[in-house]
Length: 442
Ligand SMILES: Cc1cc2nc3c(=O)[nH]c(=O)nc-3n(C[C@H](O)[C@H](O)[C@H](O)COP(=O)(O)OP(=O)(O)OC[C@H]3O[C@@H](n4cnc5c(N)ncnc54)[C@H](O)[C@@H]3O)c2cc1C
Image (tube, rainbow, N blue to C red; front, side):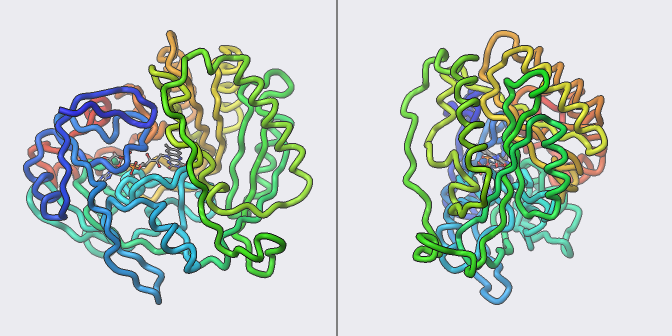
């Protein structure tokens, strides 16, 4: 047995770990599965990638199988990391259409969570750019699925959190880019209303994300920095960037041990937020060129940054609130967080469009991601936030979840019957089970 955990370091669970080295072995492990689920690079925060009894680690299946230069479509084994795709293809002028806040995730994990980036409002999620998948299902078949072949299974697998089978291989369309630089502009918003109007007036910009100071209260509630970005064209490069059209990623620093829990408290976080806000505001005057890597994946430069929250770990609460209710509900949530003084270190706001899969997380609206160190009354406080989310017609992101109740899940994802039916057809004996699926009853 091996003790495994998600990125939030909660929960820690003993599981039998199976590490196939070939597609056949991964297929056999799926068919023989005893409460099993596939696992990528373990960047889901909670218990999504932890099997009920067994877990199939896909990281050895990390080969690039073929590349169609004309269509810009790359076919890979599902355990390949996005960072490997970027390192290989960015110097050739191609970049994934959708990247989340870390490049250290596998293609299988990106599909299973239908991950979103800063461009979801414009370009949709990762699933939109998946041409086809090869899926091992517990009944013994290996099925090629796409929008034309087995479309129901295809759409259940995108965002299906590994519960329809093990993705062995996938064909992904890449985006042509002229450079590896992003032209970034920063907007300073003095409160939440200003942040919302900045998002609405920047709707046509490809990438947008806001960093919110969660400790700001009263008239400053929701004060934010909004970062807007576009892929820079060759003609826009100057200075250093001109000499280095495709800059490479940075060598990671590392947090080697669990930080003591007192490292993060109201005062350290407040000081960090103040400095960050002032530094961002100073840079807001004019657009800057930023290499793609630090623009998209700033935290990848600090290996194991999750240890800063100490031995007990942390919980990320990520919800999406439909557009019409977003501003009011987020103001209420931020007000309660500021009042509690809960040291939410990272608060990130993005605009989402519709999801690609049957139970994909995104719905048109605004998504807020909040990190909370694990402490005394945290779960009951998060239950309160869940109530606000559900009352506003929203839902929580399963890739970040470690504790929502089955009732909250079912209220947030009312259209589960189709997903459950597809799952029964590929797994009638119930061999696939993760700690997440057990907890939320799916
Ligand atoms: C710093 C950081 C920033 C992040 N930012 C974002 C963001 O901006 N947007 C966003 O959407 N997400 C974000 N995430 C979450 C992350 O992108 C997802 O959790 C992603 O699914 C992790 O991929 P993984 O390879 O680590 O998969 P794991 O965490 O190992 O697994 C995640 C899910 O995918 C399933 N799975 C994995 N491989 C397979 C396979 N081969 N076949 C079938 N199912 C499989 C697992 O069963 C599990 O349900 C972030 C995570 C971190 C740590």
